[in-house]
Image (cartoon, rainbow, N blue to C red; front, side, top):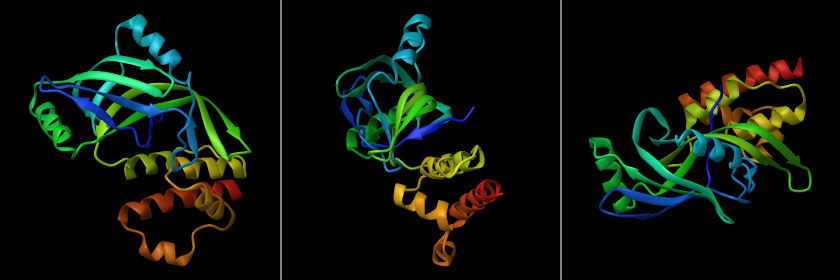
Amino acid sequence: MEIKELRIAAEIKAVDESGTIEGYGSIFGNVDSYGDVVVKGAFTRTLEVASDTKRMPAMLWQHNADEPIGVWTLMREDAKGLYVKGRLADTQRGREALELIKMGALSGLSIGYSTVESEFDDKTDTRVLTDVNLWEVSPVTFPANDKARITVAKSADIKTRRDFEGFLRDAGFSRTAAKQIASHGFDSEQRDVADESDLELLKAIEAARTAFAG
């Protein structure tokens, strides 16, 4: 199973001394830098399952599955997006997260999810996520995660050019860059300036591109 991260400006709105935090893990109608947008109803099924099982999606430290830092006690969809409220654990990492949130150093929320259903909107050139499995919501410093991008690239199932462009957006590229790469590949300048993590990503993309072209 592939878990992706949705990287948008979803901020922690409030925090108190007891370690209770609240905010929005996802904002409806907000197109992320990869051309994906979540619409109201995308979390309905997950929230129904959470209510039935009495088990909420996890609260993790920076999307790290080995580091839970608390529990979410309330999640609901409203007109704005996915509202979440929870409590940080009284552990070393939980206390660190609380202090960083209070300072403003840890100011974002990001979701880990897998897509169940989506549609492509040709008019806006976006992929609309209509149903997702929500696995976790993490307080984060930065929205991007190179390892997640590489995982997406290596696991792509590409059959058409549009599939290729879609997986490039999942891997962290803008719509313009995705179209360029799908048509012409990477230019030499992009290869020269790539750092070690980008080189791993490029190798994965080249393999996918070769399979697509073949």
